Length: 376
Image (cartoon, rainbow, N blue to C red; front, side):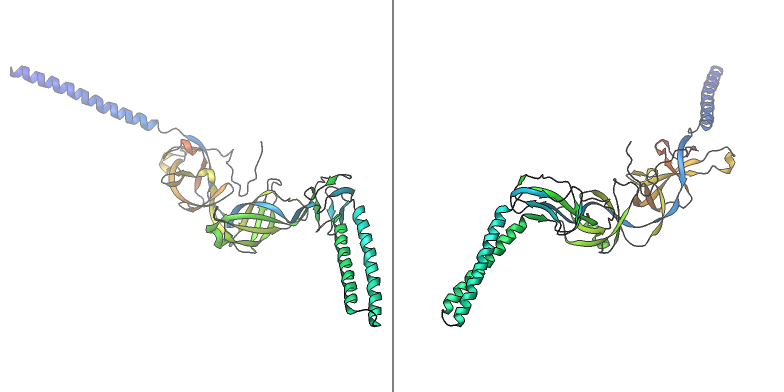
């Protein structure tokens, strides 16, 4: 009985030992297989973080308007007899633009002139008679009052005649004519637009938290999608005295030279207001930054360990960074990186810590400090 019991125990121990040994062997083989089949390499682009000179600035969206700009209208209704301008003409202040039919007004003016001349003669005769004491002071006063009344009527009629000739109120450029000879126009009809565009004004608004950064005389730079790659410069002329309660923005205006009339009233523009002295900041393309609930991170390319051999690939490592202002396609890095560090700029979505990297910079992401819109 004891012999049978011993044989059974030895058999059971042998079976359990074999099972345990197989599990240990299997674990060792799995570890060996996994060590030989690590994370697959990922192809990415990378660049070295480096310092660039940044001009601190405030950005805003603005609308251009003329220093002087009006739609020319007639104060009096009438039929157009002469148009003395062409669409697009440059005109001077006081230059004749349009003449309305004024025959009736001129005839009335001639009658009033004759009446004024007669009243003048009567007053002069009464003055002489008064000096001879042949008429009373009251009669002389009546003659004088009549003369003054006739002169006032003549001046009033002369003003009406003058309004039949429409002249440019200031130097500027005319728009497109909206009238024709022989057309009847009323006092509300627009004749032509007149704009003085050199210099030109840009109106823009900035948030109230940036009020302390705005000052009259600050330099501004302006770009518009009408002229890619071209900048216009000017200075802030005035800042509004109150903040808009609806938007919490404060309005400001800047004046820019526009000698070639490239900028037109009503155009949209991007406005950059310079503030302070230029700074040296560590910069990266914005595509290099990953934002999540814990903060901003980048993947850097760590060089392989010396023991890994010459053919070993660099590996990815995720680090936290503190970002600052943005400028075009670039973002400033305040903390978390050292200059010269290789940073992954695209392809991060397939990375995790320890992923081998194949760096291919044949196609780089955008990294322009002042990009311009492109239409394809």
